[in-house]
Image (cartoon, rainbow, N blue to C red; front, side, top):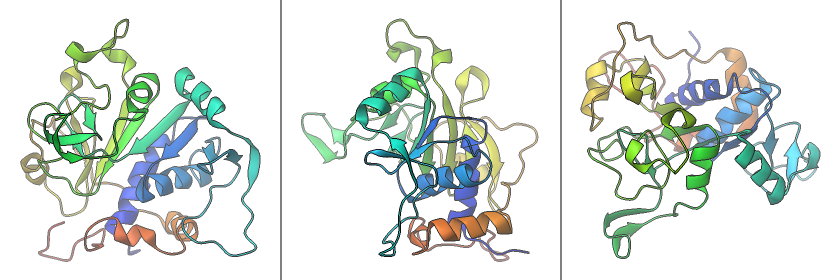
Length: 268
């Protein structure tokens, strides 16, 4: 059996979120989301588009980290902010990022924790463009530590993005306008495809049980009758990931860099 890390399992699972997108702009924020989008661009969805995060559209994804002196990125065309906004408002974009909180509606928090917004206990990055992104195009999430502080009881301390909450829908929109594709964590893969947009379990990582997922989620998880194991990376996918991440930054993304398949008697 091919050996792989839990981070590599998550990269492959996250890449599947982009499989059926066709020609849209993929934005992966963070090491694992970026590698996931890049892997999809190299394998399962070669129509996917990606930028260098500055001003160019690429025909090949850039590797992570420091590059050789003779490296030349594969510039396809100019992709300044005005063109990115055109993609956002038209829905031709799919972003994947890691929120600090995700509530039962799929609303997320990237802004502030505890207290009031004027005087929070912790101030974070801020909502930035997330409100407009979340109502305009598909979004997916990656969570490296699945626990009840992230998947918290009640509503997010600060709502940074639109979810399946009828009381917070922007005027003129309906719940079917929201498109949260996948939620990938160190325990499982989920989406919001359950009854009334309830969070739903799609697959369990090796060694993880349904009970573990529910214990670490602050609200009920819909569990279908048949929950498969998350698909293992292929040798080809692992080779592509290694080429995209030559400095192995993926090994630092999940605490302890555990294997994808726990040793006998060990849990994820």
